[in-house]
Length: 205
Image (cartoon, rainbow, N blue to C red; front, side):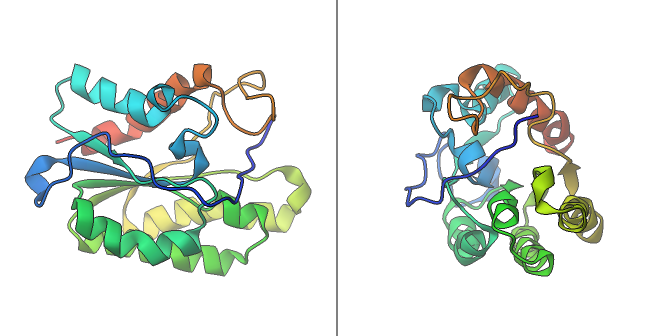
């Protein structure tokens, strides 16, 4: 199975797919992630985030999507900017898709947990519901570290009583990656969107 690496590069947040609002009535869904959610290497309109917006419109959910994901983002970077992003967009739901870059750099599990916990707490305190998105690491990082990383997401979901998508790329096949063998191609984005929607639908009320 191919695993995802993330390029730590300066990158501006993507433009919002939904309108920014000054109250929760706008029903904004904030996507707060890294390159997997930023649509790295593919046309933005084909990214899973944009496909999610299209699906929400199709089912007349009343929700709009705001994507503030940045390629190369870490939980430390997310921790530093979450308060500003929450204040700017005042989301009803926050999809948190971070941590893989930390794991690939061997950041201590306790530090990743602390950062993600802070991001979750700030999101919940803002009045938003949270969907936490899990990731996996390749086997060469050692059994102990991989196990600790894998256990991190369900632990946080239980601790903060949030919904959990165990693995964003579930069902994405080895041939559905870009030539760099690192990032999913456009054809894989529908599968990723459906993975997210499977859990997100429980918050759309």
